[in-house]
Each structure stands twice: as C-alpha cells, then as structure tokens.
Length: 215
Image 1: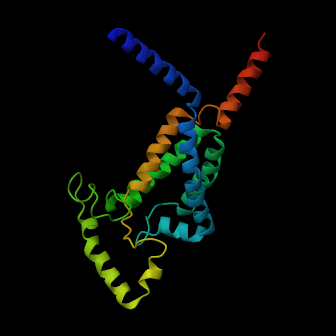
Image 2 (image 1 turned 60 degrees about the horizontal axis):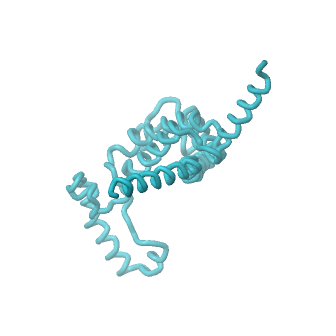
Image 3 (image 1 turned 120 degrees about the vertical axis):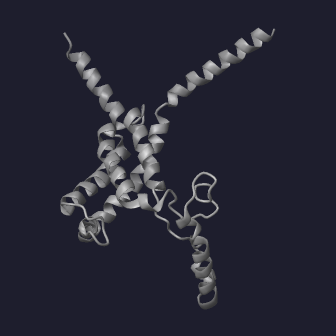
C-alpha cells in the first residue's frame, strides 16, 4: 500500500515536471524583461551626457582615470543601449551577454568595490551589522541619517520631502551590479529562452531551411 502511494506520488510529480518543461523559456524571458529597461536607461543616460561620461571615465581625481575614455564611453553606451534592445528581443542573447558581463565587472571592481556590498546603507542588514558581513561605512550612516532627518524636520517641510519615499543614504556598493552580473551569467548559459525569444524562432527557421536544402 505504501509502495503504491509512493509510486503514485512520484508519477504525479513526473507529470508535473514534464508540464513545466513547456514553460522552460519563461525564466530567461523574465530575466531579459527585467534587465533590458535597466540597461537601456543606463546606456541612454551615458549617451545624453556623453561629455560628462567621458570626463568621469578619464579623470584620475574624481573619476575612474581609465585610458581612452572616449572609446570606453562609446563601447559602454553600445553595450548597454544596443545590448538592452537585443536582450528585449531575445536576439544574439549569449553574444550580447559577453560585453555586458565585462561592463558589470568593470563597474563592480572600478566603481562599487570600495563601498562594500549594499547599494543602500541599511544598518539593520545582516550584510553590514556583523551577522554575515561587517561594514563600518554602512553602520556609520545611522547617525548621519538621524542628523539629516532632524535638520529637515526642524527647518524643512519634512512631510513633503518624504512623500515620495523615506530618506536614505546611498552606499553605492556592488549589490545591484553583482545582481545584474548573476542574471547575465544565467542568460549566457541558458540563452534567450524557448518560444519567447527571437533566437529560438531564428534557429527554427535556419534548421528548417537546412533540412529543406539537404539532398
């Protein structure tokens, strides 16, 4: 009796997982749908502020101090703007991920690494309070944020200032760039996804054309 119940449960589980394979392209599609507007916006911001972007990439004092900042700006804009559009369509997904992964690695190690993990200075986070990581920079933000709130409450229209959201201190850590990097690595291995990407339908057309032309 017990064996029959286990066999029945296993059979139902197998049917369930088999049904899920029909939707195997959905995770990649959702990753692309999430990443595309973020990347397109980042590339567009660099494009409309091209001169400032070049100065930031090349200036050794307040920027990154990288060589050939003009070329790097063009490459970054192309990777993010064009790459985001291609990701949205699911075209050349794996190839598009390569320069975007490189862009995220540069952002992580050149821009965000000295600031630790957190993007926002959350002093209660396990990634700052010593539970998993200890970040003095983040913990010091508690006193600064409290002082800023006190000043604004006394001298400003605090309700209006916080009507769009709570005041926070930007820590600018690697959190967002690392998250995007993981998502891009996933797409590098999975591709654009079944049914819901241009890559899938292009491959079907090419395979069909190859079969028709075979002797």
